[in-house]
Length: 496
Image 1 (cartoon, one colour):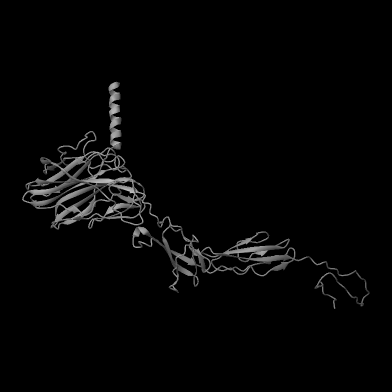
Image 2: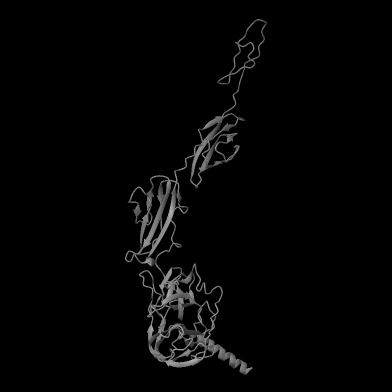
């Protein structure tokens, strides 16, 4: 039991040490042919310089293996220099994060490698990668390689050399572009690709393997949902242009991710070799002081359909940034405004291209300092319905209200009391008391207008034909009616 407890304590202490120690975050091997059988080989190792202060390996063992996997040379590379890398994003609109720090250790030695069939694989291995990396398991190590072509291909070759250091960080939800091209001293053709980094030394080994393990090497497994085709996630996956090495991505979440990049060189169509670079990318909130298109307040109205030529607009503005509106009015060149909430009167109904630009006046050409939204806005004529003239009717007699329908309009009468159908242009009304009906008409794009009509109720006339009378045959009498304005007698037989 005591032995088991001791082992558990050792495991816990190792995990704590790994969590707090500086870890390897990337590396690469390149070489330059010097003539004869000599090569100047450079090893660059990138390490996290925030969580701990462990030293770079000194010396760092680099092995040369033949095509059969046999170690033919092993040299301890002496550390030449250590450089703290600076931010690679140069923008007046980006606040650099303070939680990203990387140092690079540079090693260069001369290796004598006579031409042989199958060439050589140069290898450096180390454990361990950073525990905070989200797209690979922990713990895993790192293996960095470069290949020297065999005598059957071409014995005199220098590897490509990356033109730029890898970026320290990228910004979440912002387009990330990076020139990851390489220079080839021999003028060979280069083909770029994403590649899965190699695993390396066991986590139980505190020092780099000396010598390194022989090839072939095992690729690091990706943690779902990440993969070779989607290394860091986000709306635009991490990609590299095979011809020029241009990297593009839009990372969608903050975190730390490992990516692998390879470049193969060809001479006259013949494959010569490959160099690999592993990079740990920190995706951080760059605190860009400007709204991106997804965050930008939409212009008003939100539907971008206005029911009159007079339109009101509004947008939020970041402190220190300017706003420029272009209302898209083709009848004038003065259809612009720098106000936060401007108005504009269009010449008539139609579809107009509305443009809103938010920019940094001190650096308007920086893409991270400018945000543009282009939206079509439909301007409609005002909907003016006609409910018809006020009318009066007698009890029990229906009357029609409204006017003929306009094609494409919908109608709604309120209240619906006494109406034959409240959803048509000309319903009939049967009332028992005076009512004012309100008509709302809506066109096909949602613009509405209202009108009203009053239907009055007339009183029944109190008709009086006078008293009954008796007359003799051949005599005439005078009938006198009262109680009305006009009169009609039935039957008309015998009436004057």
